[in-house]
Image (cartoon, rainbow over all chains, first blue to last red):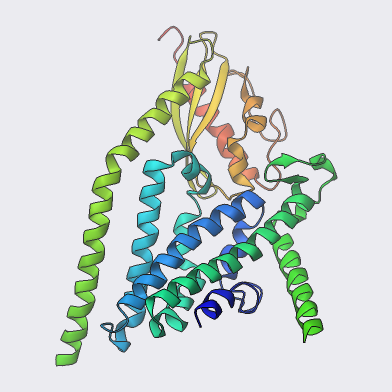
Length: 195
Length: 151
């Protein structure tokens, strides 16, 4: 049960490629591998913390007002991570600062609070958060790597070939849709084969 | 009726707890955040005036996603000696590339007589002409504010 809580988010119920939630930030920040990794780390912090707190308070949370309470918990963690990053990691904040407020609208976090943490004990919920974060990171970084190589000719900011030879469309919004569609198709094909 | 009050007060308790913890974190982090901002400004002043001579002029312009705050160094001859972006919220991967030296070093050596227009004497960043134009405007504003002989 504990292993399943952790494991299912990575491939089987991958939030981006399987459940298809959190697509908005996925499309927006996957234009380079560095951005994708930064967003994944920030999402992991908020998702694990909010899953934990939601699971702890689930018995004293009335059903009717659970959604506003989830939102309060999530936005509190987002703001805390924003302040802490600004104060102690200003260099990192200069890179990722723009993504941090975006996490509030990442529906993976609200989705996991509602679908998992509200119905399961704290430990399972934390593990679900870790697994889902890994799944999100896996999808986001793969998309970011493909888009950065094809669109800018670089990987994690290191130039691989001259940018003139790259297809700029891949770092623009259409490139996100093309890449994510190809990844989903590949994963579907793989799953069909396994079955 | 009673239910509404019960729900309302539970929600209020959660809000108070959240606000309280945020106020606490804010109190702990704000002095450091301000100190970091001051340091960044001081650092930017030094960077845009490599010779140590001239004026560093802070300007703020409107980019694609809100304000872009930048520091423009102008030497005693009225030429731009350096430009540094202090804060910006442009699109990551596109407009946010205005912070890169490759784009910013184009401004070095420009003066009040330069056109400072995208596609003329400045190469815009691909997919980010609005952000690029905003930086041009910022440099123009700084050149206007510059007063020769006033260190």
